[in-house]
Length: 182
Image (tube, rainbow, N blue to C red; front, side, top):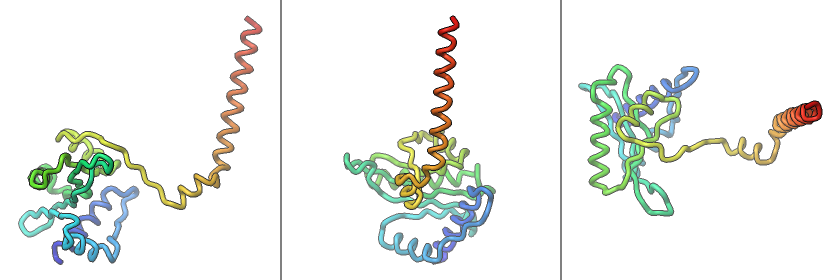
């Protein structure tokens, strides 16, 4: 359980780093039990990096279909973080070496890393290691999606449509007057 607590503490620090404005995000109370169950059930593997007895980084990985229709498989690194004070000391490389070995043992075809869009340095680091963009995943809350689909956000859209229509009519009138005067 100590490792789970260490991982959750590091996860909280990682979300703090990526939050704008910076604010701590406490893991949900059930996160510790979910993480313990997932590890115990073999759904995922967590790698915890330590420097001496201090936890300094972690990653969470799981085997998953790369594409449901093709049946190809991948090892997905869903969470990945190293404490700023430990970066550029080989911690991340050591954890990814473990991922590569695990992927080879599983016989998966690809290793995929989910990197937050706000983590530009991490994006570049993964790109230098040969990771290429595969897809862009976008997220929305169900209620926001429902509003957009129903047109409840339509007032702003209607105004934008009206302004666009007026600009088009003005441009057309300008072109007609230029062709008449020419």
